[in-house]
Amino acid sequence: MIPTITIGNLQLDSYLLFIIIAAVSGFAFYLSGLSGTKKEKTITHAYVLFFAAAFITGAVFIPKIFGIQGASFSAGIFLAVLVSIPAVKKYSTGLFHASDSSVAAAALGLSIAKLGCLFKGCCYGIPADPQKTFTVFYPETSAAFEKFSGVPLLPSQIYQSLAFFIIFIVLIKLTKTIPFYKTAVFLILSCAVNSLILFTRPVSSSELWLFLILNCLICLAASIMLIIGKHTKTNT
Image (cartoon, rainbow, N blue to C red; front, side, top):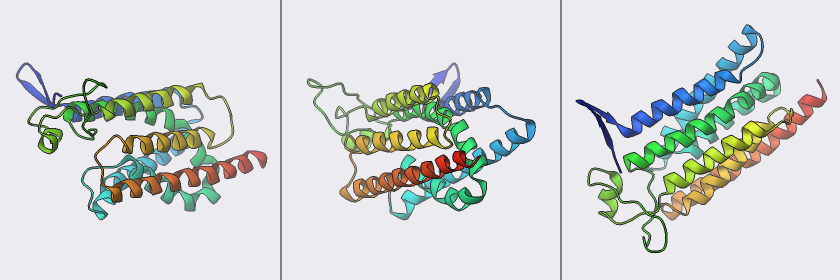
């Protein structure tokens, strides 16, 4: 696609540009929907920063542990959920409010960020017949070209971007007030999408099973925390 976007004499990395747009859009949407007192908002911000730090750490470093190149959404979510579990019993109300307040913004940001992957030529799909399905070609400067040398590939980034945008729409339409409900819906739908996307990408069998297992564990944790959320609402 277009790894570098040129504006006059300025050259911008397309992936970085979309990441910035995604971060700004997601943060703006998050702030627009945040309610409560100044103290409550400060606590919510702290939890969200905690989630974000855990997500980025997991997304970057867990794949490296298993010798996998690149970042992983599932690995990031897995670590964010894992480190949140010890705090659930004591801080469930604040933690659940923070996660429910931020997941729609996260879905919006991820939808935009995946377009950056498309332009950059990373997170690419498997080879496909352009006569039978929509495919994309990548320039010589992209990682996709290095692996497949100009072969038409499935646009798995577009599939994932559209899926996250649909999840975003679903989340802003939800009206249930059960703590962690929106977060559970986000986690379960996201893991389902990412599991399906794996079959459109050139991953090894070990990578496939690793991420499928991570997605299943995330869904299990989401279900358990949703039960805790219902219990929290009952007791308040």
